[in-house]
Image 1 (cartoon, rainbow, N blue to C red):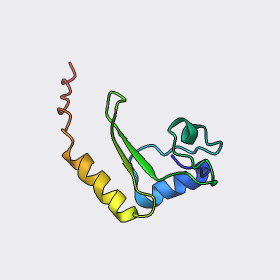
Image 2 (cartoon, rainbow, N blue to C red; image 1 turned 30 degrees about the vertical axis):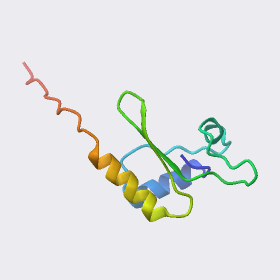
Image 3 (cartoon, rainbow, N blue to C red; image 1 turned 135 degrees about the vertical axis):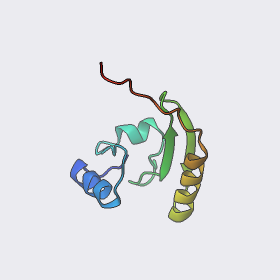
Image 4 (cartoon, rainbow, N blue to C red; image 1 turned 90 degrees about the vertical axis):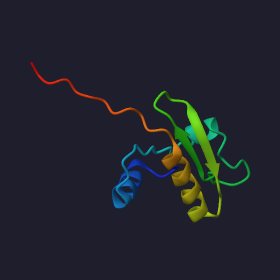
Length: 93
């Protein structure tokens, strides 16, 4: 989620090959709902929420200025998550 507009988000996601949805939050509704909006500055905290397949938040990471540390910790956490069982497709009859 970002306060950037949708075209900016799409360009960003495409440039990085992101494989998950990006959300534009121009009105800051989500930023306020997740309490990541600075009340004294027009900025949004850098927070990553890891959400499982059931919609449960399983990890929260907050690093304002250490972007590399932020990314490293998120990736380490995500890689350590249990993998869902592989789904088998039934042969067509």
